[in-house]
Length: 227
Ligand SMILES: Cc1cc2nc3c(=O)[nH]c(=O)nc-3n(C[C@H](O)[C@H](O)[C@H](O)COP(=O)(O)O)c2cc1C
Image 1 (cartoon, rainbow, N blue to C red):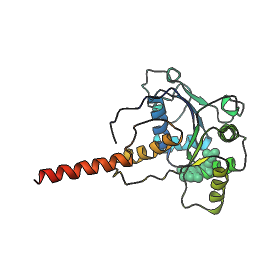
Image 2 (image 1 turned 180 degrees about the horizontal axis):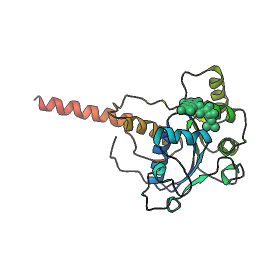
Image 3 (image 1 turned 60 degrees about the horizontal axis):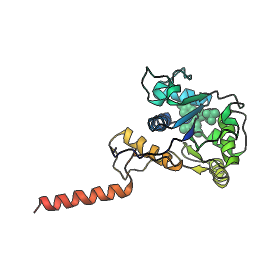
Image 4 (image 1 turned 90 degrees about the vertical axis):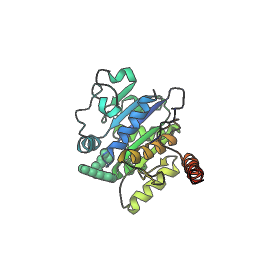
């Protein structure tokens, strides 16, 4: 949406969890941006998350050697050279399952009601939910980008539970006040909010103050054209 220069920030380490809720493109855009900004990126995908990546983006057979499309890197680069790592979803013994693996925040996007409920009830028999529990106990930022509509009472209660435990509930709920012209603009809007939530400096999408300044400048230009 904008071409403002990307802010410089020391290298960070982030975790992205992908579950079987609609909106795989949000995960792709978030990962692409983290990698583009040079941050170390760890990924964990549930079984149904893999299905959604296939159904919505045509991405399949993901391994540590084939993350190119998901991470937006050239085919001839190995993902490891960009510090992108895919962790096995069923292995709670992987590094992300331990508090000794220090990082700067995890985003679960899109987050299903199933994973929301599992995390809210402290259920951690898979790496994604275990990694989320670790965030809560270690006080690492944990962002839950839930996707479902409408919400039932159980979803709402689970959100309250996680909010009170320290998570940030940031549903995939884009605004339209920046006048998006494409799906990419809408995805960028949401990605910008998620990056804000984990403290990553970026220039993915315009901010409201910038929009107001642009509107003001356009009005002034029209006035002076009109004499
Ligand atoms: C095509 C498709 C779309 C789905 N979309 C959603 C969704 O938007 N939100 C949601 O909570 N569940 C959705 N589901 C259901 C979840 O995938 C299902 O509850 C699954 O158990 C989630 O597992 P996970 O949390 O381990 O990924 C969808 C399932 C399919 C097959």
